[in-house]
Amino acid sequence: MTTSVFTPDEISEALQFYNTNGYTAIKSTLSDDYLTEMRKIMIELVDEEKASLNLENYRDYGFLLCAPYYADKYPQILDVITNKEMLKFVEAILEKWFIVYLYSNNCIPPCGGNTKAYKPHIDTPRYIENYHQSVVAMITMDDYTEENGATWIMPASQNLKEKPTDEHFYNSATRLIVPKGSICFFDPKVWHAAGTNYSNDWRTCLLVVFSRPWMKQRVDIPRFMSHIDKRNLSKQQLQLLGFTSAPPANFKEFYGNESERTFTQPFV
Ligand SMILES: O=C(O)CCC(=O)C(=O)O
Image (cartoon, rainbow, N blue to C red; front, side):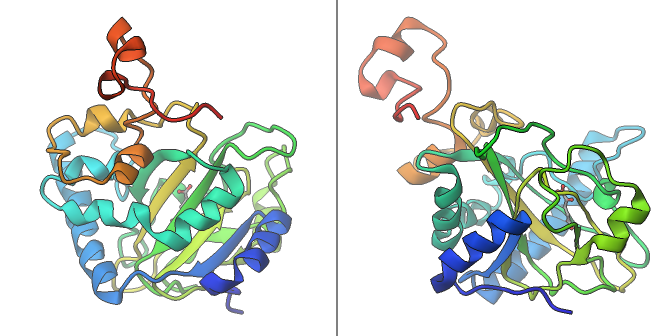
């Protein structure tokens, strides 16, 4: 059974589905060429990051710790974060001034491969009633199928505080069978798992997690980007990446001219 994928005009239907089930999918307007190029870049970077870290017991293979770190070599990595349909949906959940908490990906290797996300899990075990602190946006760079490891998701499990048994999870979970170029949003409290990829090619996606601007990012993206020339970045990109919500580190950064301040967006 395929997953309902809403069009960008059906945002209110998508939101309603999300609020009930803890996930939803919309069709993005990202071009097929852009997604194909990003797919190639991400697969290359996944191996590059592994080789450069050269860690024993490296468990994060398939994920990048901070995709914006590579924007010097591949500036197009940052284009996706201002995608209008994605931001419109996220703003409906998190209100204005949200930031990128994490920008990563999940590239599952072929022929029976999986990554650390293959066990049922939630991303954030914090529960505030009637309040969302973050939203995950998974942008598919392949058609997702049962064979290539489409995500398992347990509908309406975002308030389930006890870990379901594997049997319960897999009996009640559905697969996200969606085409390339879908934006799948999920509540980080919904129980989910990446699948195992039995196909002959990688299964890939971008993972952009958005959070309220008062939260600490997963990694300090502005400092991760310190080697990158930011002059070509738009105000909106800088704001989303957290450059305008960094806590001040001296008096000038708090009291100085607007250009010297680090926290320059409204409090929410
Ligand atoms: O790639 C997937 O299918 C799911 C990713 C995931 O589980 C996660 O990022 O927490």
